[in-house]
Each structure stands twice: as structure tokens, then as C-alpha cells.
Image (cartoon, rainbow, N blue to C red; front, side, top):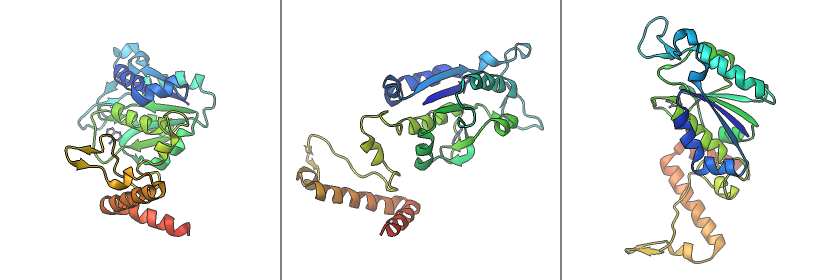
Length: 238
Ligand code: ADE
């Protein structure tokens, strides 16, 4: 997968894609990142300004269309297939990201992420190039970088071989759709807080059953919406 990221804060994005799973995935050859500084595409005549006041009034600044169109034109030249590439714009008024969508996006060869900032980006950018307007939750962050990185992280870890074991991605919260269950590691007894006996028993069948029960309990309690979905899927597979 090749990921192109347009941002006014390249250092911020760079430090994230360099580290942890995103960095490892690059080392493993699963993904390549290209980061574009939005200021490099700004119009010299406007004093390298990338934002401006909104028409019609209101607070906050809007990212101007020209630098984003210019950056996109530059990226587009290098894309293998413009039609199958996905262009993501993280925004609180977008469609809520979920694991199914992350899976879908992890199978795409070329992704462009446009990180907005301030109050947002000019609507004409959204109308003409964005394919996926995505929200990471019902709260507002100061900029699109962190949201863009959350989206990218959730996609990259699902690319085959990006992380050590596909199994661990498959068992995640939401992939079943059940929340993840409790995990323990050594020491089995820490200051009298004990690991459940079953996990030390070596009985894989019983351990699997125990995990599933814990996941079901948690899902039922915390996410009635997912619980309903899970029950329906379970009934459908009978
Ligand atoms: N930008 C600011 N807040 C956001 C959110 N909740 N989701 C996606 N992008 C955002």
C-alpha cells in the first residue's frame, strides 16, 4: 500500500509514521508513506497563506482550496490508478469509522489522506476529490492530523504481515463483533492478584470457551448495539 499524506504539519505526521507499528510495517515493506507539506503548494502571491476567513462570516479559519488542489494534482500524477485510489478526509461530520471499513481500506493499493486544520477545508475540495469523509468519534480535535493517524493506524495494522500475527488482529475488539476479553501475563500471582486458574490449565478448548464468555459478558454490558449484531450473526450461522 502507498499512502500519501497532505498536511500543514509534516513533522507531526512523520514522527507518528516513523514509530511503532506504522514504522515496522514500512520496514517490512507492507506500506510506503509520502508526506507533503501543504505550505510547499501555497500560492506565492498570497504570501504562502494556506488558510483564510470563511465567506459568510463565522469563527475559525478555512484551509484554502488552491494549495490542496495543487498538492493533489502533484500526487495524482504518480498514482497507478486514480479510479481505485481512496482519498480520505478526517472530519467530525464524516461517517463514523469502524473495523469493517478499516478492513475494506486495508485492501486498497493507494490512499491519500488530507489533513484539515483550523475550522476545516474549502467545500470544493471535499466535493471534487474526497472519496471518504471519516470521523473517529463524536468529539472534536484541534486538527485532522491525529484523526488521520488514528485512521491510518487502524488500516495499516490490518494489512497482511504488517504485524506479527494476523491472529491477534482477528481477535481484536470489533472483528467478531465482540469486544476483546481480559489478558494476563507473568507473574501469574502479582501481590496476591491472581490469574484465573483456567488460563494456567493448558486446556485450550476450555480456555477458548472462557475467553468467549468473557468477551460476550463485556460486550453485552458495554455495547448493547454490538451485542444485538453479534446475536443476529450467531443466529444466522446456525
Ligand atoms: N477532526 C477533528 N475532530 C475529528 C474527529 N472527531 N474525527 C475526524 N476528524 C476530526
